Image (cartoon, rainbow, N blue to C red; front, side, top):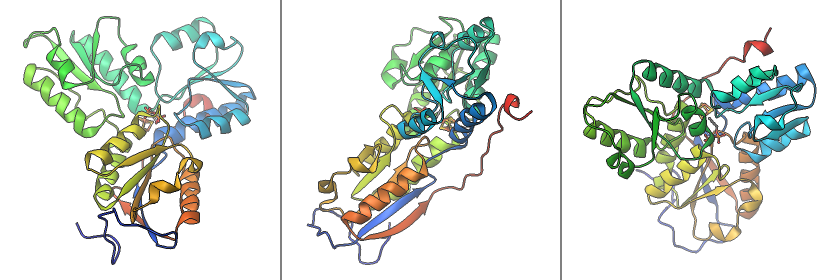
Length: 329
Ligand code: 0CM
Ligand code: SF4
């Protein structure tokens, strides 16, 4: 690939001085996806409609800045429904919840709003359909992640088995002619997941899969953008939280292409030493990181070195999701 700036040698290793321009390649798309926009709007509109406090079960999206901003407007974040008084409205996070959670809210006559991303809900419905067809589900995902807990909680215990790796596929206690289906978490590595699915299809040639893959458009587009820019960079910065699956995957994508990457939550985490020998820096943000934090990072970089900025666009996004009817009627 040609160097994206004239006279830029991205081999790294040379000394750079504070007045040497830093080529900054900014990924597009980056940052908020349609599911995150919708989830945050559900909390904001609930605060307007019901007044504070509005409870939110789990971080609405995995971003501290977003969560603190909503706390300042009157949202109270909890991990479990039993921490919410029965007479207060509660919002379920974008990552989805097990079926037992809305069932318990109904039992307690609570006002609840479901901010589960429609693309996660789609996987929930696929799970139900596969169980109706008497298939056991192999779910590809990261153990302990709230989306995985939510999706596994759509079916009865024992109806879904979690795998994370090809090694897990090798250990599955099923026969090649068992009735099986697979589904995946929405925020996985596109490349790793393709390998795990290939291993599943090899061991279980009759396994049924989703019509379109479950990894969401936002996850794949953000990974594609990092693939486009990382080879031209000496370092990539990813703005995102350590518990944000899709953000962590962006760091991995860059590292696998041989470009070191660092996950940061805010600009103040940038260490000036990181830029030593860096001529071209890549910058992106996970689906839960707001654009204001990207601008904050660009401003902070500008204080360390003069910046030459360019956007590298891998895809255009126009997705918008409707709000729940409770908030539009
Ligand atoms: O699932 P992940 O950990 O990537 O969540 P996030 O809150 O960082 O991003 C948006 C979503 C979803 C579902
Ligand atoms: Fe939905 Fe994908 Fe965004 Fe998660 S990352 S909220 S699944 S669009």
